[in-house]
Length: 264
Image 1: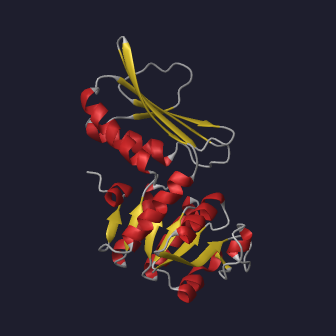
Image 2 (image 1 turned 135 degrees about the vertical axis):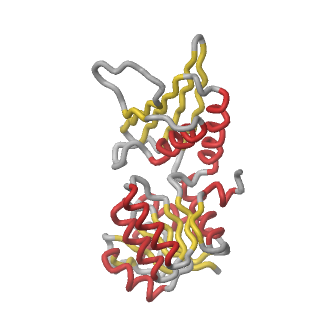
Image 3 (image 1 turned 60 degrees about the horizontal axis):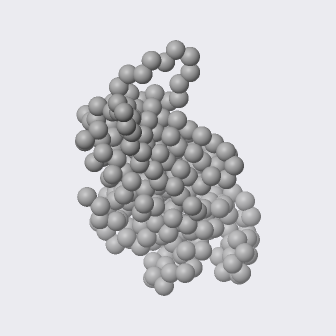
């Protein structure tokens, strides 16, 4: 049985991840961490019934990890909190699944150093859905053949998402840029903005949109659109749980979701 800790346990993603953990015969929830509902039973907080796992204070994550001794911590929070969670987990030899987005380069470096120095395994991905990971592969193939087309990325999310553009959109731009040998990015446009050979990236925020990503390849007389739409957060939660099972059994290092899925 793989013992799991979940940060942001009282949030929407945290609750859905816990629901998936409870359905698995291979996983056991041993620790729920948040900044709210501290001391309450996480099952009762999320409407699952009593689980005998009390919400631990995120401000004292070290103590929570020492008491529960999880094999893997799943983190879908915010960048500043996630960095602290990753560093503390690595110190306690806890493997990681990180789905938080919006990291600066410095924050990413801090996490990677902690993971490598402490010899743990981590899957770090801006998106855990199987479809999105296939989507990124399709973009690389399209870019090889449509590199002289104008390329625009449009993403849409709910009105409570804090970072923009989304980590998935940024990853899409990186995949295309790397395929084409390096491209500049332009984030939105206004005023005089003649188009060059850049990749345009645009963010929409509204309502309860789970996550839409469209990449437009526009040429003379035609265009191709490659799109992924998430209908619910279940796609992300299911993928995160799959990653948790996988990361518990691999050698130390930093991986992506495509490694979990075996995508070349």
